[in-house]
Length: 255
Length: 324
Image (tube, rainbow over all chains, first blue to last red):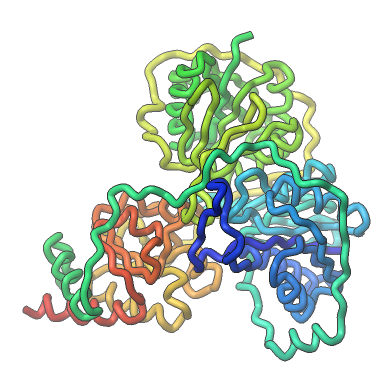
């Protein structure tokens, strides 16, 4: 079974995000990038499948600052091959086209990627690939089980309120993973260092030009209405003040 | 033919989801401003009985088939494709929900129509629809329009009052015959929610923890406060995904919708997906190190600080108050 995992980087929202001079985009100068969280879950689910059923994992990532670290980490965790696509594009529409183009040269049975990313304004990778590769799709996936005898997968998808659905399908397909069955594994730094010495990231490139079919008129930090009253003082003081406010609401529990 | 706006009706187990009425209300405003008609697209099996709830729409485009019993994105895509062949709609609105996840992007990709995600509202300016998109977990917003006349918008739940999308009128039903479906994905069964030790939807007091709690052991700090206040601990998605608390404690889009008297959010930034689950809380207070965290926008009081430091202090302060 050939499993392909697709990864994109997104701005780390732990850092302050600033808007650039055009007023229509993030100021990338100070951005720190991390792998989109649900892409990490897609990788974990791939590793779980490989442990259970064998096969190989190819991780394909769009180039971005620090992406090499993520790719070496993926290799250290158990990926067999890692590919970096050089591309300047950041929008999802173009990224999907670039992924689709790259996948023409890669053999796959199943493609896993994150269900969505925090910058998915103009598209979502998995459904876009489903269309362009003409393969089945399911999103908000939280687990896949392979039935060797039948050659089919049973896939769990989340709804709301804890309700889930189970679906049956055959490869090839592309899934948007919400969460792996287990949290993404930790990999020791020593193993990542060993990966950096022993393996090479393959490079892929395309001549697909960035394009967009939406128009961003402006980008801004939200104007806040009805914002919380922020309590000021030492930690001790604000804690006591908050306890008083909770008491005023009649919400102090009485045991 | 009159141009139109189509809203995909979202329903599960015989019940129409509130997001549908929110979209219909919003769609009605936009349709009226542009002089378009408003259509509700109802796909399913034996769902004709739901039509009477969709009176705010001018037309209900109804397609019934056994293959449409459950919302499988690809099957829905084939149905929507057929409807598009017959109607050529300008604008399609879909809910930002787990159920319809992917339908908009599939349709966009198949028809070459721009896809605009994460919309919290729509307005009309100069004959064009402008969407406000919530990005980067609520840290940034953008005003966006389609480069074409057509567009597919995906709308956040809670973006518009659902009650304004209900009306006591009878819409015109337009039956549309189903295509011959190619079924790559088959629905097998529902997996009912696990029954947990605590039903967080029934709690008056909830101490909610998020990424800021840093590790599993620190959840004890929230449990101590919850116990002092007579409440329970719940969490945002990352805590559940880490396996630190069971799914039954999850608040948000995939988890539970809670409306407690007190919701204390500790180390939760307040992304839209989380807000969806706790927006109805009566008294919300938040502790977060980031003064710009969106959680402060929907809280009555806030403390900019480290939840790990503040939770024990707060527990102690509550204990003292109760004693005095």
